[in-house]
Length: 206
Image 1 (cartoon, rainbow, N blue to C red):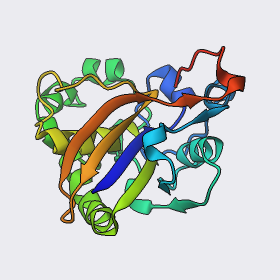
Image 2: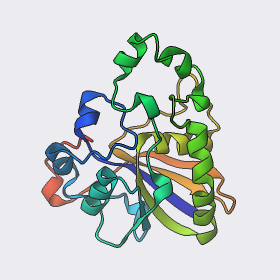
Image 3: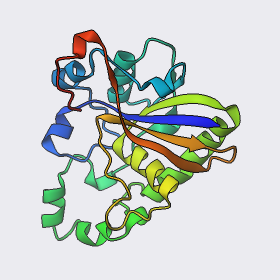
């Protein structure tokens, strides 16, 4: 069995503002780095191979959480939000020219103008997942909210309409089984990151 643990990057300024952050290369805030300091992945992922999105927020997160070699994986880059990049949901829903309300009812086929849909994200991830499935072992991917949601949707056969099968916590790891074709099954969602002694008295918020 191949075990894949998905971990979202830490907090950025745009996360704090509620802005859609796709390919914009926004670094972690000081708060985001502090929240990650002293943390490690769950014990189930000990000895895992690390795969990291090329964007700086993911690379910074992985560098704080890991003590081993990191593999930059271009296919883990965040979803392309096109014309929605840098805007908030409130702005987009209030803009009659954005088509946001109609778009949100498309689920997996939500498609920002000039951007990418969750279904497209799933398609670009499929070869990467198949490679992991054939390799076996344990793997960690440090990536982004939309990438993790796309993998989650595939594992649960969820069309991204209505409530998700499980409410994901973005400060925790999400573990999936991957077969040799890249097929996914949920293993454990919302697994807390481990704290070292230095982090024991600190609240973690990503």
